[in-house]
Length: 548
Picture 1 (tube, rainbow, N blue to C red):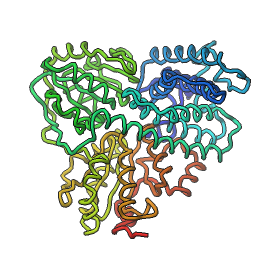
Picture 2: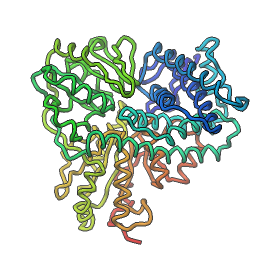
Picture 3: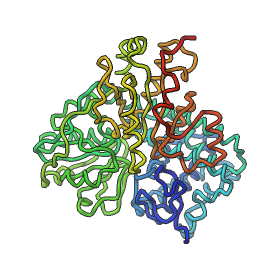
Picture 4: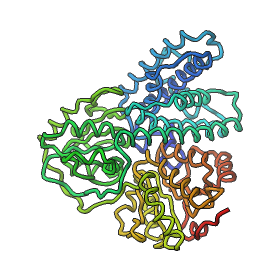
């Protein structure tokens, strides 16, 4: 059968090998082709910006933001709108040509930097996709770097909308992206670049953490309502806190309530959002359940970033997108960085809708980002010293549809009562409603927030290392059993590897884009492994750490 596309950037890729006829995510071959072309064009403009910097010339923040948004647009489940992606390609080519004219000596630039958009785009896309790199190991490393950079672009974009930039991160992202076009780089050099991507991943996460906390305060322990009110509502999904803030401001006094969904749940933990009386609670679970949950919500849904499941016709007219998100036939709310978006069309739509249908009642507790956990540090340390807490298990990352992901629910249930789960990301929906109790008042599930907040887990680990006077982060009583789905999880993994964390269990399957040889490097150097049992993980670090 003729292959119509090739994509293996997410965990659910077909057969853990690659989607070749249509994406498991719902992405069609023509959209996949344009995303491949967008990545190629973005590598091209990145080669130009890198050359400009080498010549001592400035690259504007606007160009940095364009490149970041381009990559974010190609993340799994973000944008399914072919026409929108084509428009982004055209805009990027125009900007690239302007920059290209500023280079004193363009002779060393790759073909991608010089392509002007001529010819048939579908045919061009077929020659520049993933499989255009023939060597399996080179291809694997190029894609690992590219997916890490896509994850980094997400962190950077969220910081940018809060008017925070890191020129060093932007310059690296572009240099690394351009380097994936360089046929002269060896496997060893690409491995080094992979680790460097992890280093800048830490910087990108720190940038976003600073942007979020300066804008909205440090997350604090919060009980979040999972029931519903009687007013019509708007459901906000995705990850963008600034979009949520603008919507909350515009819904005051309208009689319309606002709810979070999936990765937006942690917005409730920030002090700044608690002042809005119509910010009711969280509705539903992880992103992949949205077909039934969006149906029963009854009101409009705002998708602020990725995690779109192709909508059912019954609620498609209620689905709105903004930022990097897009879906054909759904209304897109425009607005650039620093601009005030106009959400009046969604608010007016909500007024015509019934209140949400209640699907559950009760509360969730969260807000255990690094500032809050460090405020409890003495309590946590005492619990470790007394033996009340014998192990921390990092179970961050992504949720997904695969039946194999029930493993994480069963794993959480099977953990001994003296183990505490540290989590961030939508993976928490596999266990955050289980009655796991607490240890001396410390909840056994400490939710740091979104996948975007995984930085907190690294800060907590490093602080515990300091408190216990350890030389090595791997001497802590912490095991890592991380679920992954898309590219933000890739940059979190690379960041942890850069910080020296070893013996990470990654699942429910290892990435399809890891060639056998690249997987071997990760196993031998970092102890990367697939998912494991509670019993096997419990063999590692089960007692109070010994000071060195």
